[in-house]
Image (cartoon, rainbow, N blue to C red; front, side, top):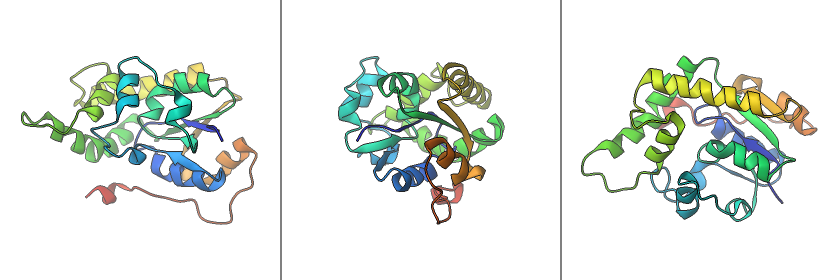
Length: 200
């Protein structure tokens, strides 16, 4: 089966919608953090190893999947781009770093802060991702997070050849994705999912 699309976009950039979209378009499962049984704090041996610089057998990690979106996969877009050289790299973005941060702060960071409690014992996978993403243990800062967002997106834009990269915003729906994959547009509305209100 193999990975046909590598989602390089960060959480809160439409990744849950993309999971549903690729499941329909590619007739196979999409790998999103939500498929990890212990998510978001217990990511499992393979991802713990990857975060420590010991990359797993990607074919084993993504066995049965046709696309990967969201963390932890998008944190390793360079390695996955090399492992799957024929896959489209899709960079999902928000209209600005500020807009992204507000969404991220009200959802993902709200959950992550629970792990900062002195008596926390449920794992630290999400904290490890945040520290890798920002390069610091002081990730709970708007400026640090927004700088990391811009840095991440710029790295993808600089590194991925233009004929292999699709930069996408959720408002664009099916059309650019289907054109990039040379697939017909489904005769159904784009699957909007995981809005901020669903985290309440």
